[in-house]
Image 1 (cartoon, rainbow, N blue to C red):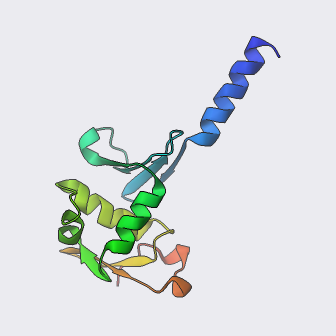
Image 2 (image 1 turned 90 degrees about the vertical axis):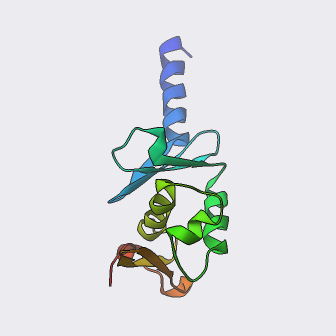
Length: 126
């Protein structure tokens, strides 16, 4: 294998292991080290991001939250500042989390039964 081909293969592997998804207000990055980053869409500041050891850690956080929650409940888990609101919004936007935004002020999310979750309605506001 040539050096050029090896470099192209390495770049392809890096791209496959690092995936970024963007939603309306938030974005997420699956890093090659297995960590999962939730960030404010379009922001490059570390103050607008929360790094988790894995996506499963975010799933466990979501599962521990009450059926109806906002930034205050997320804050009880040790997450501080604007990252609390960022996560509430991310849960509402990401199709893997069965919930929807029910109120903008204060920002509130309500969980839905898994069987009725629909990725196309993630983030709808009633």
